[in-house]
Length: 203
Image (tube, rainbow, N blue to C red; front, top):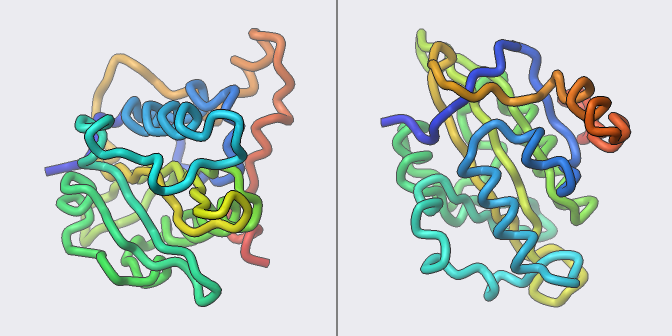
């Protein structure tokens, strides 16, 4: 069982960076990940980020299978929850494991950089890349959305992870990395995407 209805990008280049909410629908390829971003934005209201208590599973039943929650402490980030579809696609339970302990191959630097961006900045982060699981080439996409129990420091990372085969088919193609064309057409500034290369956030 694979998590998420992937839309093919046709690009093998990994992408990671801060996620501007205003263009999230154009950047994020997976529809359920886009829905998680909209839900997080709704729950934070006028706050920089919502508290964990504001995240109610009853409100997002169709998204729970890809949801992730990680606890954030001074020692790092540890997985608390990963939805059923994402867990099945990954192949094993991750509860209690540090984020750097996940076996994500070439996608691991993207995954860690996205966490670093979200934790250090308090802003949403996005990552997409490919990796081998055995002999199978897979693509992964994640959005990471910070939560704060006190309104200032980050207590948890909420978000989603989808993993699927590279060779899939769909009627919708995500805009990244051709987002620059779309933004130019819509009159926005490409610089707002602020995509960085994997590995830069941890330096």
